[in-house]
Length: 122
Image (cartoon, rainbow, N blue to C red):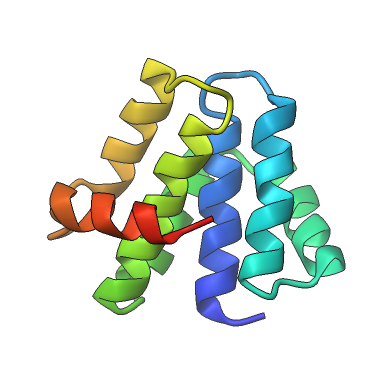
């Protein structure tokens, strides 16, 4: 698993727990995401298990650190995935949007670029 894939899984987990509810549509979207990004199911599940035992503040710090190490194009893709995951259940919960804003604060990612990238995803 490469750094992009690992960071994507962290972002996925961070968003699905943001509103305190695991929605079946968000879980289903995760299956589509790992297929599209060529992530092995066992690696995905192992990462999720590890994250489930990690404090959310530590996850947020790790996610920001790992995101900062990626090229801008991959940063955009991960943030676009975060928005798609938040949309997966049919509505964006305010806590999901706040969680995304906390992650991208300080990154030079523009909303238009995120929207364009979001349209290219699943």
